[in-house]
Image (tube, rainbow, N blue to C red; front, side):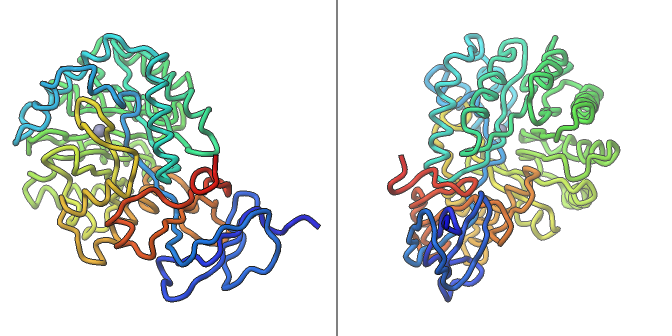
Length: 406
Ligand SMILES: [Zn+2]
C-alpha cells in the first residue's frame, strides 16, 4: 500500500495554539491533516522538535530586475533618495535610470536567479516582482523575470509586474512597451502615477494602467505618492479608479510615503476609500525615511503588509529576500515591539502579504496549499529576534530548502 502522506511534519508548534504540539500531514501539495499524532505512513517525515511551523513568507514588492546593481551606478542616487525630507526622490529615480543604459536580459537573469535562490533559502515562496518598462529598459527586465518565473515555478512563485518606472506621459513609447509586456505574459499591470509632471498626466497614467489591466484580466500594482510632498494625491485617485473600473480587491498600492505627511482629515478620507476599493498597502519602512501610517491604517481595518522593496540597488544597499529580517527592521522603524505587535508584523509577511497578492487559501489549515516553514524557533519573538533561515521550507507540499535538501 502506498504511504498515506507525501510528507509529515512531526511535533510542530502552531502560532494559534502554542501550548501543545501537532503533526501535519501533507498529500498532493495540500495540508491533508493536522492532528496530535499522525500514525499513518509517510514517504518522508521531518521532526520540528517543538519549533514553530507557519505559513511560508511572501514578498509582495521587489524590484527584481534591479537586484545587485548597486555597484553599477552612481552613489549619488542613494544619497538623493535618502535625503532627510525625500525632496529629491524624483532626481534619484532619474540617476538610477543610468544603469538601464546597459539593460540586457543575459546579465539580469543571473542576478535574478541569485535573489530568488535567497528567497527559497529564507522561506519566501511568493514574490510580486517589478520589471522596469521604459525606453531604456525596453522589455529586457520583463523577459528576464518571465524566464525566472518559469524556472522557479513550483518552488518560488513569481508574479511579474510590468512596471512603467519612468512614467507613461513623460516617457515616449512607454505605453506601447507596456502593451507589449502584457502581451508577453506579465501577470500584473504596474504604474507610478506620481512621477508625471501634471495632475492631468497623473490621472491619465492611472486610467491607462487600469484599462490595460482590465483588457488583459490582470491585477494592478502602483507605486503611489513616493516623495516627501503632502500634496500628492495619487493614492486617492488610484482607489477611485479601482472602484470605477470594478477592480475592487484587485489593486495594490505600494510605498505611499507621503501619507506620513497627510493632514488627518485627508488621511481618514483616503483610508475609507481604500476599504471601499478593498485595496491593500505594501509598506517598506527600511528603504526610505518616510513610510505609510501603518498603525493608523491597521486601526481603520485596511490590509497592510511588508515588502522587501530592493536588494542592493540604487535605493537600498542591503536585502536578502529574508522577510523575517524585513519584519525585524520594521519592528524598530514602526516602534511595534509588544507581543501583539510582533504577531501583527508576522501576519504582514505571511497571510496578509499573500492576501495582498491575490492568493487564495492563505492560512495554515486543512485543505490549504502546503506552503510552510519550519522555523527552528519556538515563538514569533525568537523567530524575529534571530531572523535566521528556516530549518525547512515547504512549497507545494515539497521540501525545497533546509536540512538534507539539495
Ligand atoms: Zn519600490
